[in-house]
Every structure is written in structure tokens, then in C-alpha cells.
Image (cartoon, rainbow, N blue to C red; front, side, top):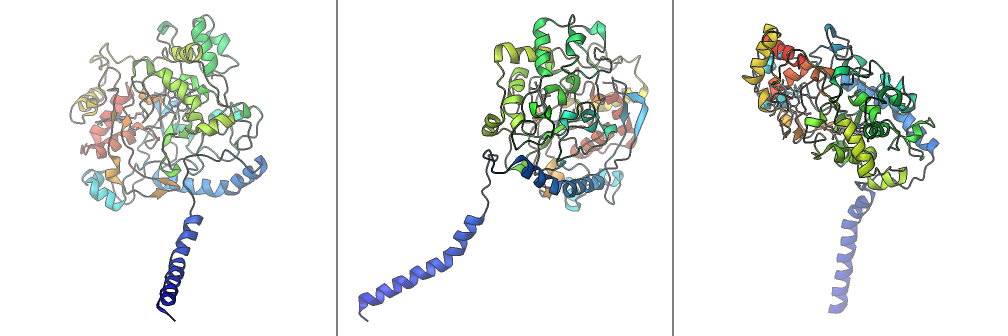
Length: 462
Ligand code: HEC
Ligand code: HEC
């Protein structure tokens, strides 16, 4: 064997070694799934096949989710007849959070690091009913009235007593003399005209018509990839299917602007009362006007921020000047509920408030520092804050959701707050008592139990 042959053999040997060493990793890389930002627009399966696949996992996923809910919360009914929402439903009472082998008093004395280490934070981010699947999900109290909103593959998870009124009151900034215009009726395409004709101008009336008109959405549309059996469900959803009577019914969704799926937040429908005094819209998105948000909902949020999917499923493009503006004009006259105990500065009227409510107000503005982010008269600073709740829990998966950082979130206004449980962008606090426990830990306030009660009493007056 000459020198050249020798080099050739060595080279071949090196090549074989290279293939042997790298082949498994190449094959492995091929087997690894691509994490894509896009949904599967090109379906190769039929509606029946997709439905069968969803039904095959339905009960197991529901069981896992209910186990998580039951381990975190006491879901048995507790309300108070003394305090009602403006539509008349009793307000839920908490705290509903279950503690794992620790008392509230002990938690009060622990540092964020200690609570994180033990895994004892009672208000970790809340996953969606089936987080891997997502989509819009409507409470039973609404699907009973509007069966077109039933999803065959997913049942609503939270008990009705911690949800808002099924047909919330409507107050108009333009006609405060009328009081509640809804009077227990759920406003839909069937009754909006007779109820509002003669009260609104034609432009607002047309805006309201669009707010109660169905348009295609990710789960409710005519493609094989839908999650509705009903022909009327295929027409889509309306704005007021979630923002019932311009308020909220507790319907929830996954936020559209985060990928991958497990990092997306569960989001509770916020009320649209008082959007006129607000300057930022969306828990994280911070869109600047109600018009922008109205346009964005149907074009993007309805389809999880997936523009290809939106095109396939029949996105409805609203015309800015004659549709978006009209809808926003109606939304901008939805008032907060009237309250008797607040004066023109939005502070408690000393003569009407109880001693506990007054102590609560003093705490809110003083020791508890709530007012630094929630100043009167509307109890919002129209800004966003990062509460850094992740100081209290580890980043890990919970039923398909990564409990990660929330990042900066909009300061929601607290006017009319007793009307809109569950609270926070993802609904992790079911009652105002839970809210006080939450901020007591987040801000490390070391509040005493009487002080916590006073803060709740104050918030119920807002
Ligand atoms: C799932 C039911 C659902 C439907 C249907 C829906 N929304 Fe929303 N809406 C939400 C949720 C959830 C949010 C919170 C979004 C976020 O946190 O980013 C929201 C936020 C908003 C906001 C911002 C509120 C705020 O306080 O920041 C406006 C305005 C709004 N929606 C208007 C509309 C309009 C107009 C339509 C119809 C085109 C509509 N929504 C349809 C659930 C819904
Ligand atoms: C550093 C700013 C900041 C402070 C201090 C603060 N909040 Fe908030 N508050 C927020 C933000 C931001 C949110 C929304 C958080 C989310 O959705 O995850 C919020 C949400 C809430 C909500 C739920 C609103 C809704 O519509 O769901 C209530 C109620 C509330 N705060 C009450 C309080 C009380 C009571 C205190 C004082 C004990 C307090 N806050 C202190 C910024 C603050």
C-alpha cells in the first residue's frame, strides 16, 4: 500500500466515523417537531375526524383541569345577600384560595423566596380549561340562553356564583336619568332595536347593531376546523357574546400575542363600562384607542393573532369610518354603575360611609398604597405595572400552561369592581377578599385581618 492509498483509507475512515457520529443527531433533528407560530391552515382531516380526536381527550383533560382548580380553590358556594351587583346578583365572598399546610398569618410573615421555595403561593397563574387547545369559551349561564355558543369539545370551568350578572345592567353617560336600560334583558340582535330606538342616535344604534351581529371566529365558523355543531354557531360570535350588555359574563380566551401556546395567558373578558375615561386597552397590548381595539378584536384576536387562519375562516373587515367608529361611539357611552357613597371627587362621602368603609379608604390611600396605582376618581392610573408575581412561584408547567412572568399588565379601574368577578387578567382571584390577600403578599404589606376586611368593605362601595 503506497502513501496515497494509505491517506485515502484514512480519509474514508474519517468519513465513516463522521456519518456514524452525526447520523443519529440528524435523524433526531428531523424527528423533532417544529414549533411554529402558525396554526394548521391546510387541513387534511374532515370535521368528523377532528371532532373525534377532540372528543377522545375531552373528559381526561377536563378531569385534570378540575383537579387543578379543586387543589387551588374551595369552589363551594359562598355569597352575601347584603351586597349585590348592580343587576341584583349576590356578590361572592372569599378568600376562596386553598392554602397548602400553611395559614394566612404564617404566609404574612414569609418572604417571596420562602413562599416560592415551599410552593405555597395561593394565586399562581391560572391555566385555561384546556390550555393546549385554547379558544373562546362561554359560561353555561350564557350558552343556556344562546345555545349557538356551545363548544362540543370543552365545558366551562368556573362556578356560576363567581361570575357577573347573566344580563348585566347598562348605564348610559348620555341618559343617566334612565338608570339601568337593560332591566334584566340580555341585549341581542333580536331585541336591541326596540329597546334602544329613541334613546340612541342613528349612528350609535348602527354601532350597537354591529356589536350584537355574529362574525366568523376561530372556533365558530364554517370550516372543518370549527368547534361548533350548530349551523347558527357557524356564523360566528358577537362582541356582546362575551362583553354581555357592554359589561362581561366571565367568558374567557387565550391572549393572541404570545407564542408558543404554553406561554399564552388565559384572559377574562373585561367590562367595557368606563372605556371613555381609559387610555390603554388590552391587558398587555396597550392599544391606544377603543377604535383600535374594536378593529383589532375581529381582525386578529378572534383568530388568535393568526392572519392566515383569519383569511381562511372568513375574517370580517370592518370599515373604519362608518363601522368601527360607530361601534366605538356606542362603547364610549357605557357608564360605570352609579354609586351613592362617592362624592364628585370620587372619594367616600363622610356622612354616608360606615366606619369600616372609611378605615378601608384610609388604608387604600395610606398603608396599603393601592392609590399609587389606583387613584380616584376612577381608581386607575391609566398605565401598566409589572407586579413581579413570579417572585412567588417557580416557572413550571401546569396542565399545559407555563407559569411564567406576567410582565407589565394594565391597571384596571376599580369603579364598579364588585360587579366583575373573577379578578385579574386571568381571573386567578375569584373574590375581593382574594384580591386583598393577593396584594398583601405582592406588596408585602403585613395587613391585619381587620384591615383586610376594611379594604374589602371600601372596594364594595366603589
Ligand atoms: C372571548 C370573548 C370576546 C369577544 C367575542 C370579544 N371580546 Fe373584547 N375582550 C375580551 C377579552 C378576553 C379582552 C381582554 C384582552 C386582553 O387582555 O388583551 C377583551 C378586551 C376588549 C377591549 C379592551 C378593554 C380593556 O379594558 O382594556 C375592548 C375595547 C373590547 N374587548 C371590545 C370588543 C369588541 C368591539 C368586540 C367585537 C368586535 C369584542 N371585544 C369581542 C373578550 C372578548
Ligand atoms: C404597583 C401598582 C399597583 C398597586 C400598588 C396595586 N395595584 Fe391593583 N392592580 C394593578 C395592576 C397592574 C392590576 C392588573 C393585574 C393583572 O390583571 O394581573 C391590578 C388589579 C387589581 C384588581 C382587579 C381588577 C380587575 O378588574 O380584575 C383589584 C380589585 C385591585 N387591583 C385592587 C388593589 C388593591 C386593593 C390594592 C392595594 C392593596 C392594589 N390593587 C394595589 C396595579 C396595582
